[in-house]
Image 1 (cartoon, rainbow, N blue to C red):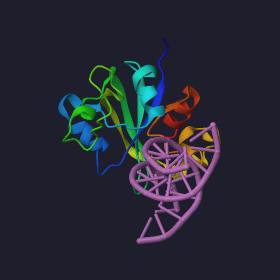
Image 2: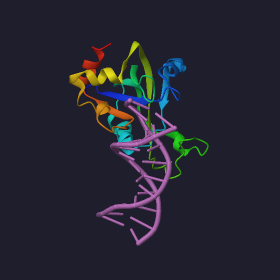
Image 3: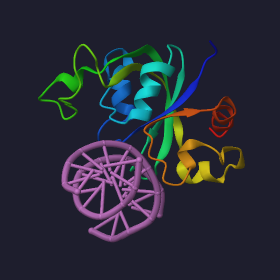
Image 4: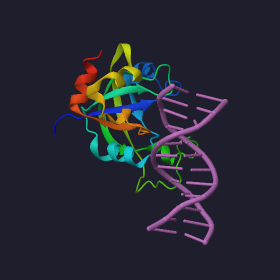
Length: 154
DNA sequence: GCCAACGTTGGC
DNA sequence: GCCAACGTTGGC
């Protein structure tokens, strides 16, 4: 299967790309996603080796700040089973998990983030999921052409 | 802080 | 199955 591309959103006050760089092995478990469309990507579509744009949402400016890669494909999100977790979901059962996670590893932090404003100015990106009105999906696909166009903006 | 857009819940 | 109410996301 050919490599696929994704964009993961995170609020930098919750988990930033700097936090990812500082993590053990520069790797973290991407858990806590509680949206079914995003879940389907995590559980079925995302493969080891796929590349990810790391996006800071609710930020100043909101921007793509770097790249990560998938090092472990979809597996049950354990935080859903932890009653002390903010992401606990009593409806998710161990033998039939509702939610999934992947592991991602830091690849690169951009010297200069690519801001949402700049992304909107690029005509090649006008169909990008991130730029659609009302788009809130926190795990979303990026086409190969979109990936190349954004990397060219570095 | 505001608010538009979206997803989920639950009554009927 | 419809839809109003509610909670959340995230740009501004």
